[in-house]
Amino acid sequence: LAQLVYNDTRIKNHFQLRVWLCVSQNFDQMKLTRETIESVASEFESVVSGVSSVTTNMNLLQEDLSNKLKGKRFLLVLDDVWNEDPEKWDIYRRSLVTGGKGSRIVVTTRNKNVGKLMGGMDPYYLNQLSDSDCWYLFRSYAFVGGNSNARANLEIIGMEIVKKLK
Image (cartoon, rainbow, N blue to C red; front, side, top):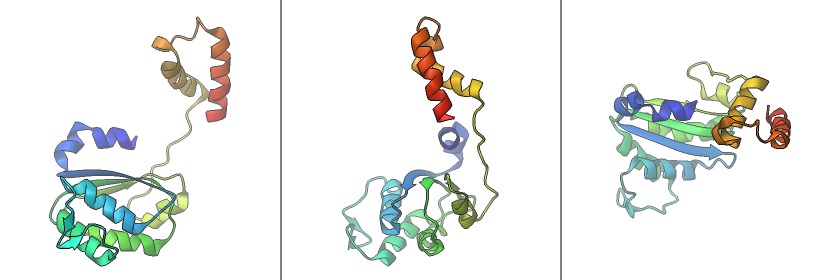
C-alpha cells in the first residue's frame, strides 16, 4: 500500500523530494541520518558542509540534512520500523523539522508500539486477506496467466502455502 502511494503520479507531482528508507530492526540514528542525506542529495558529496562524509558527529550530519531539507516539501517513508526508543526517534526527527509546509512522514511497521510512539495521525491497520483473496494473489504470481487448473498437484501445494502465509 505504501509503495502504491509513494509511486503515484499525484504524489510525485506534489512533493519536491521523495525518500524511501528501509529501517528494519537494526536502528542506528546516525546511519539513518546519513542514508537520508544520501537519498536527498542528488549526488552524495565526499565533503558535507565542509566535514568529511564519514564524520561521527551527529550534530554535523543533522545540520547538513536540515539544510538539504530546508523549505522543501518532502515525503519520507520509513519502512519496516521496529525501534521503540523515543529518544532515538527524537534525535533523528530534529533534522526533519526544516522541511517545507505539507511535508509528510509515513511509517510502516508491524509493531503497534512503534505506531503509538510516532504520534501524528491514527495508524491505518491493514487486515489479513481472506483465504480466497490470498489464493487469487498467490495464483496470479505462481502460475502463468493465473491459471492453476493444468497443474492440480502444484495447486494443492500452493493452497497449503497460502494457508501458512495467511
